[in-house]
Length: 343
Image 1 (cartoon, rainbow, N blue to C red):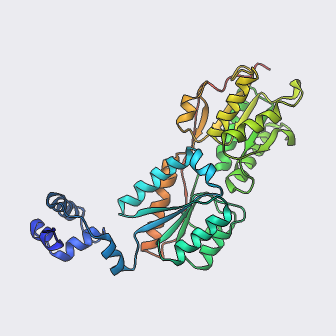
Image 2 (tube, rainbow, N blue to C red):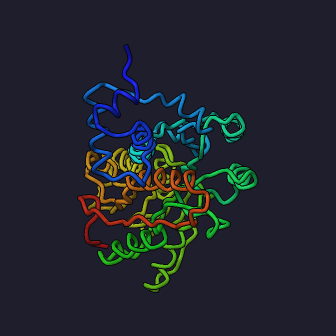
C-alpha cells in the first residue's frame, strides 16, 4: 500500500495541510518544520505526485530553456553543459524540472517555443542568450509570459529580468592585462555579431585601446562562431597579415575558439606564448587542459545558470516581482598562454 500525505503527517505529528505546504515549499512554514516533515517523507519513502499537484495548481513545475540558433554550437561548446548544471540546481531546489528547446535553425527553435508556451508545457522560459534582434523575446513579451535572460537585453533593459556579467568591463580588463604585459598589437576574436555579449565585449576592447592611446584597427577584429572552426578561421586570417603587422596578443571571446586558435598556430610553428599571447573567456575545463594552459576570464558560468532559474521561479510564483539585473562577477585566471611582450 502506498504512503500518503496523511501517513507523513501522522509520523511527523503535523497536520496534512502542513505536509502539503512543505511539499510546495511555502515560505510561511518554518525551516525546522520543513526539516521534520522532509525527514518523515524520507523515512517513509513518500514521493509527492507532482502530476496531480500540477493539475490542481494549473502549473507544470517545468522551466523551458531556449538555445541560441543552431544546435551545433549548443552541443559542442562546453559553456552550455556548465550553465545547464547551474540552471538544474536552481530549479531542483524549488522542485522544478527543465525542458530544452533546440533545433536545426532559428525557425525551428521559434516554432518549438510557440508550441511549448501555447501547449502549456512550461511555467516560464529561460533564454540562454541575448540577441540584438530576437522574435522569441518579442513573442514572450507580447504574451506577458514569464521569462528571464542570460545576457543583457539589447532593448527593454529595465523591463526584463536578466543575469549577466559586466562584459564591457570584463573585456576591458582582459585587454588592459595584455597591454600591461607590453603588447601594443592586440587583436580581438569575437563571436556572432547578433549576440549582445559580442557587442559589449567589442566595446570593452575598443575602450581599453582608446584609453591606452592605441589606434583601433579593423583588420585586428574578427567575428566567428563559438566553435573550434571559428577560432581556426579567425587566426588564419590574422596570419595573412605581414609579419611586422601581425598581433602579438589576442583576446578571444571563448575557450573553445581559443583551442582552435592554439591548434592552428601549433601546425604552422607559431609558439604560444613566445610568439603570441592568448587570453580567452569562460574558464572551462579545456582552458586548463590545453597546451599551453589558457589564461581565461572566469565568468562563473554555473552561477549564471543558477541565478537565472532562481530568478525565473520568483517571477512565476510572484508575477509582481520587480525586474532585476543580476551581475555575476568575473576574474582573470592567469596561466601559461600569456607573457610579457618581447616585441
